[in-house]
Length: 139
Image (cartoon, rainbow, N blue to C red; front, side, top):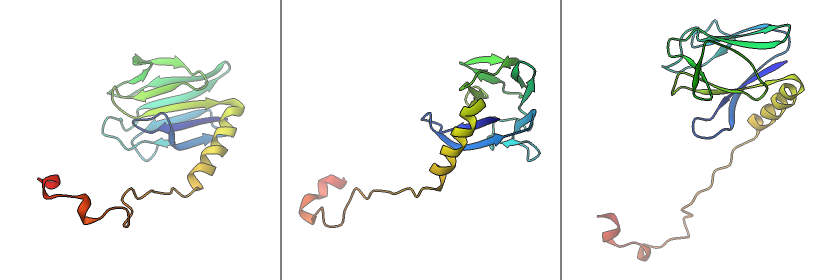
């Protein structure tokens, strides 16, 4: 099993994931015929592929804006568990999980995505009065 997680743009937390139990070739890109579809202007229609061989997973770049691991462009690279790669120099980051970790991670992401997100109102209606503000606060 392999799982790919799209990471939040400013934090290294997953916001979406894709898990594959039995696929040995995974297509990544902007086009709807990919297995992993990423909507971003810097992502090519068919940006990258992951393919499984006898020694593990490999990644190959097809994107016009490149694929980067550790801020270095790659053409082809062996996949390492927990590896983070970026589609384009400033594009979206994804993390790869392989083996049992992928299954565990996918279940955790699924649970988190089903939870309700609570927001906090920082301006409780009874917390401030008109006297707390003066006209100069708004000039």
